[in-house]
Length: 255
Image (cartoon, rainbow, N blue to C red; front, side):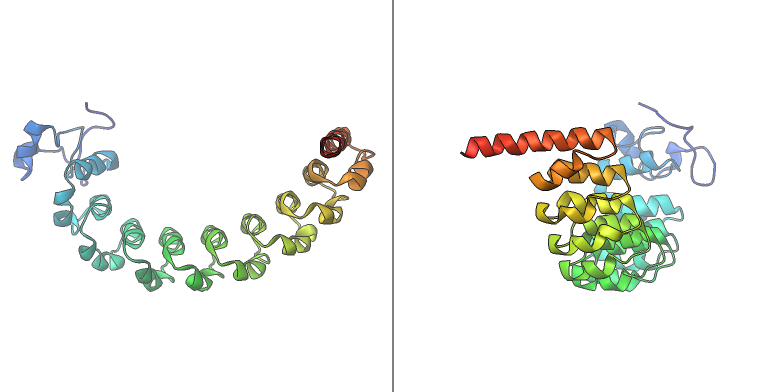
């Protein structure tokens, strides 16, 4: 069923099925104006055309409209994709990177477009992610933090972007989390407090941010929970009391 904007080609002219070399597909519902068409400029229709006819993708890799090349690249033969790493459009280069073997990703670590470098960060083997550790874009470094080897995470914990540091806090060896108790971003400290060993939670117990102290109160051992039961904030006091009750129940069950 037709959907979306009026069927126009990438230059703004009306789509003409009669002059299309694939018009024989109309009868089988494999294409149609407003439905599925490689000549349309509306991306969902282009995508549907190649979903219904993936065997046609190779023939469209040099199409003048970047959206057609990008959608065709998702279905084309892998052996036809390496030239697309030099495509003038970043969307096409990104698709090629995501489909080609990971070793190819090194070729575009310095690509000028962030979307391409994000794709590179998703594809690089973890030992090679250091190539993007100092990327100018935090979205690229965030992918690095989520995929990097454990040994690289302490270095990434110094990243200037709080979301990157938070991703590090979610993955780094718990023994290292104590170093994040002084992080300037409360959500980084909270993430660390949710993972650190309970016996080391005292480092976060006096945190000025309510969210961090709440995370501590939820996991605190009994002495620390008793201290937090006197916190200035009623939510922290209530959470600490519930924690003490839980610890008492666990102790009684184990007796």
